[in-house]
Amino acid sequence: MKTVIIGSNHAGIAAANTLLDNYKDQEVVMLDRNTNLSYLGCGTALWVGRQIDSYEKLFYTNEEAFCKKGATIHMETEVDRIDFAKKEVYCTKKDGSTFTESYDKLILAAGSLPIIPPIEGRDLEGIHFLKLFQEGQNVDKELSKEEVKNVAVIGAGYIGVEIAEAAKRRGKNVMLFDVEKTSLSSYYDEDFTIHMDENLKANGIELHFGEKVTAYKGEGRVDTLVTDAGSYSVDLVINAIGFGPNNLLGKDHLELFANGAYRVDSHQQTSDPDVYAIGDCASIYSNALQKETYIALATNAVRTGIIAAHNIGGTPLEAIGVQGSNGISIFGYNMVSTGLSVKASKRFGLEVEYTDFEDLQRPAFMTENAKVQIRIVYEKDSRRIVGAQIASREDVSMAIHMFSLAIQEKVTIDKLKLLDIFFLPHFNQPYNYITMAALGAK
Image (tube, rainbow, N blue to C red; front, side):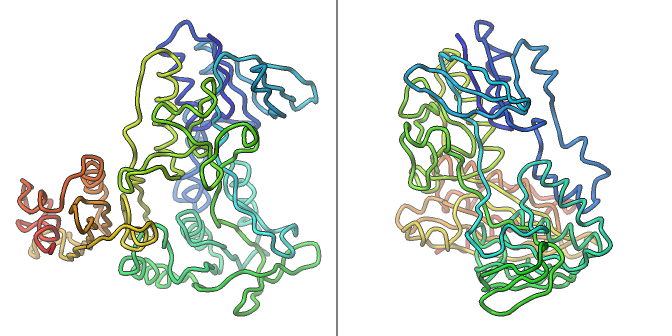
């Protein structure tokens, strides 16, 4: 059986490895328009901000590794179109030569594309996006220029906040813009984001929330950013507004989700039984919402790639849904979440309650300590947990995995009230903040 995979980042790599490692009858062809594969984009800000020495280790595999396993791989290759009836993929290489690949099964792992609003002046030099490795390189080069002093970051989601920190660590004057009232509003409630905003301000980042960018000005290169609240002198603009699914190759043939992602079943199969979609270009099932949605995360990409490949290889495997678990660490302040915030629950029409608690991570007599803030969100009628948020200068990241499992397994808030949680002063308090939050639920 011949499987063609379009896109060779996290999702495509997971699918290819699964097929090559487990199904020896598989002929695997990988197609990608980039010069490289397996780039861990989440490390871009760490490299640009010089928190790690170099970018080399942000690549966890390479073309040679797949060739050794028997795959045929074409890098710097554009897929021009797909004939789904003939089951053929038409490609153009960097040198202009063309070729066609037939397939028995096709995996679409085309990922996502940055959102580019039709703003006046968006084609000026000095305006950058962050998605590919090459784009990270371009931003890094810009920040190395002495004449680049004032940096505007548009979008205060994860990527925007991270690259704002990176630019500040490089000694730049940084302005962070977002139409929302706070940073990270897609993941956390305002009771949490307010503390991240304070953290950003305390570290010298100028916040411009509740402002909408309306134009870029300049002669050849951007020098002014205009919003509905004022004008600002800038030397560099980094757009981090967000991403949407890349559906360019199959949107006229395959069934689409509301936002344009390819709709898939629990096997990652699209409306065409010979075509599978994985990663950021596909819809996904949310256990918190208990319905289909869209969540673009690298971890989801890997899981969906594994699922699609096993089904193609002949091992029936169903997705179990996701919670959208995520985290961020900025200037030493850590925030993690899973499932839905109160704000997101209301947006999706879920009637929820929540319980909050705040305390020190360890007993007060411990010298190494910090406050921990937690919120558990649960459905009002069923009382099943649908979300959790935790923030601290301590590393509290592992706790969120328990809440992810709780959402997946439809655990109720009441089940947590007497959960067996160990105590040792080195780690936590006898009245653990998870227990105390659960006991505080109505």
